[in-house]
Image (cartoon, rainbow, N blue to C red; front, side, top):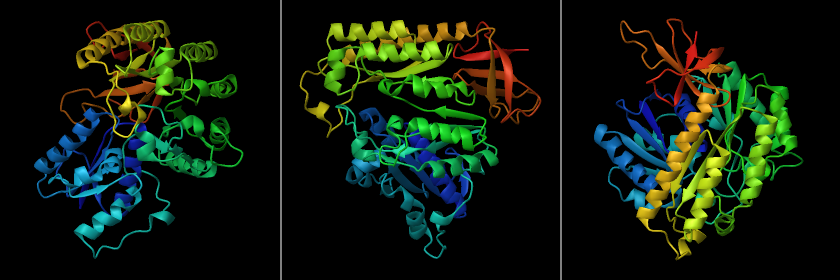
Length: 430
């Protein structure tokens, strides 16, 4: 039987999907792309905004329309939050939230063919996603969040903080490295809280242990909070295997809004953290998230956010229009911002981000960086030289043409930009 996966939202969801694909593979299923015919379609959903909810429902309907006889499984954060709403949708056959993800394969087998022997995944040592051609893998180091920001539904759908033991992470990463993966992305809901529930360990100690006890070529930390970034942590980046990319959510440049959001830093502390990164690691990439239109956000509040974004010069910025999530404390706030104003503010920040994005790439012209090449976008088309894309350590997307097999190769290249090309993708100067 064939199974396809569609993943919405964060890197943590991507890590969960990789684990699910491994378990389906071990159970004898063939993994296919989500645009191919399949017997089982697994949708791993997001619920951070109402737009994400709508996207999940639409994707489930589209999956059933494309494969009318397929068994559609809806899982993830939206499934955890509103299972009864989803099970009432005719196109969805099974709804399982985050807590029950480990039972998905068993439930699917029971529904479709109860005579199949269900494997014991708890004792399996099959290397995660070893059947995949991907060059990087997501490894979940922890799940859950205890911080309860006013706007965020994630603590309700992911639960309290729970860390994966260091030795388990080392074992996973060594298996993945032996299977050919060159880059490991460490994911979680709240990475900086790693070790909170374990004895005598922390994010820094865990990273140091991984660097000491694995030979993985690259290690990327998916996200950190500004208050978690100190000199002691940054000193680990003396090891070039740690990627020089930091995703540090801002959410707002206004201290008044940050306080209402229940964020644990001020705009001044945020700027200090960014300065610390850049003084320690010149040329590092800093990306961020911002919410516009949070209840009570005044013109002055927004101007502070725009100015901070402009001054910081993020190499990429995700702009979200505030979306009420039932069950969060922000859902009880009454000083709402009108949708047209949210849209206008969003566009202003996007324009600022595009300018910063362009400036950052231009500052890298002529520099030499290590690129991890991935699969060609033109593979198999007769008469065309394959075009490979890859990422530098500092999160710049690069492309090159090559008749040689480049997938999984890490190569030091000189970066350039061609007029008329996609401004988000740099080229190789040969």
